[in-house]
Length: 339
Image (cartoon, rainbow, N blue to C red; front, side, top):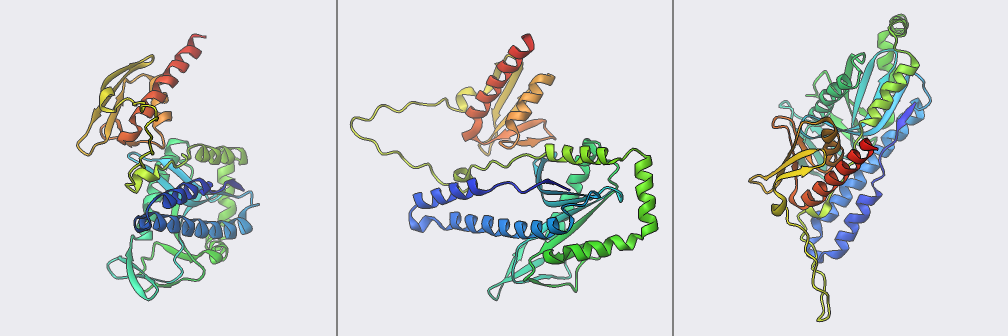
C-alpha cells in the first residue's frame, strides 16, 4: 500500500528560476546548479518510485512511503523511499542516487563518481543510508513502532549507471532501481515460507494486525515535515533594491531582530531570544505544555532544534515572523481555552 507520494518541488523550481532571471548572467551559476540538482533528484526518485509502486503498490503486506522528512535530535532526516513489511517486521531505507555514469568505492570507503570522463568525490551513499536508518529507529521508538525490529539500508542507483563493487561492504546493498523488485523478492525468499508464516502468526497473535500496521504507517506520515527553503538566504543572494522615484512613499520599517532580543512575554509564558556569534538567534521558551506545542509547531521546518541546549536556532531574517506567529498562536490558544 502506498501511504505517501513524494512532495511537489515545483514551487522550489519556480522560485529558483525567478532568482536566476533576476540575477546578472555572471552570478547565476549557483542557482543554475541548484536547479539542475533538484531536477536530477526528482527524476531519480520518480523513476525509483515508479518501479517500486508498480511491483508493490497494491500489496497489503507492504507499506510504501516516499519522501519522508522528519525531525531528529538536532536537525531533520530525509528518507527517499521507505518499505515496511508487516509480517517480517522489517523496514528498508532506500537512498536514491541518480548518477548515470560509473560509481567507485575504494578500499578506504571513499566514493567517486565519473562524470564526463572526470572523477568527482562524493559523500558516501552507504553512510548516508545508515544515518537515515539510525534516525528512523529513533522515530519508530517514539511513535510506537518498536515491533519493527530490523532496518536495512539500500542504495538505489540509476538503471544506466555502473558500479565497481570490489571494495563494497558486505552489509550494504547497492541495487539498480529497475531491478529492485527482483532483488527484494530474492531477499524475501531467503527467509523461507515456513519462517515467514511463523512471523505472520507471531505478529498477529501479538496484536500487530492490519489495523495496527496501518496506524503505524499513518503515524510515520504524520511525522513528515514539509521542507521550506529560503533560497535567497541559502544561496547568499542579496535582496534586490526596489526602484524609487522622487514621489515614492517613505519605506515602512520592520522591527529589527535585535530590537526584540531578550525576554518576550506571551499569553502562554515567556520566550527568551539571544543572538549567537554566527548571527543566528537562539530561542528558548517556558516549560509549559501549551507553549511548547505552539513553539514547536511554528519553528518546525523554519528553525533548527538543538536538543543539547534545549533551544531553537533561527536565521536572523526569520526571527520577526516566527516570534509574531508564536504570539498570535499563543493568543488564539489561550482564547480557545477560555471559551
